[in-house]
Image (cartoon, rainbow, N blue to C red; front, side, top):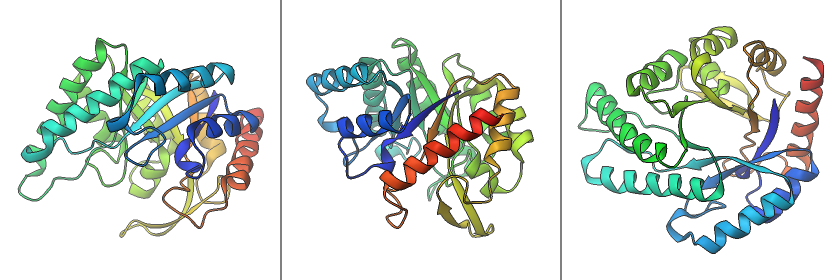
Length: 275
């Protein structure tokens, strides 16, 4: 397994500084937040931007492992077409950057839509996106994420199986499954095993599971058994990237990345050497 850093962990750095920093702390890959204030702004992306990013990645011998898209709402009629168009644009950017994966994080049923309607509209939208992505050799990766219809492992499996396309897989994020409180490490990995394309790592202490309240922490300081998780992933033959999803962008009181992500890198390198 290989390690990558997520640019949400370094909101004060530009993408080129982020690559230098990730290389310095021993990460072989970079996952890029794609939003209006992200390290790539899909609405203002130019081919020259992509060329510069590719050149820097090549210089640093760093793989662009995933683009994190925020075009989420494939349900509401008034925004669906624009969201799908935006998502396809991120897929196109991924192709231009030589990146094989684009994240999809869903939403809960919005007002005016039943769960079944929201599920079917999300599924059909992802099928369209996957057909577009397949021609560009890009994977759609559904993340099991809080605040979506695919937080648990079984729900995520159901979505991917019903889409039933050979370039649709899963970003496995055990922290959200832990918060969901239904499946444990072994169960969730076994359920999603055929479809795991990528893995996000973070740590927390849950203070109220019913309300989803938690304290986000650097890796190894929370209640997630990361060594067991990595050992389980190794046992199923997973050899892909593990992204340190340090959430500094969302939680300013986390230590600065020069401390927090550096410590995360050392911790993960230690765990990988022990399993």
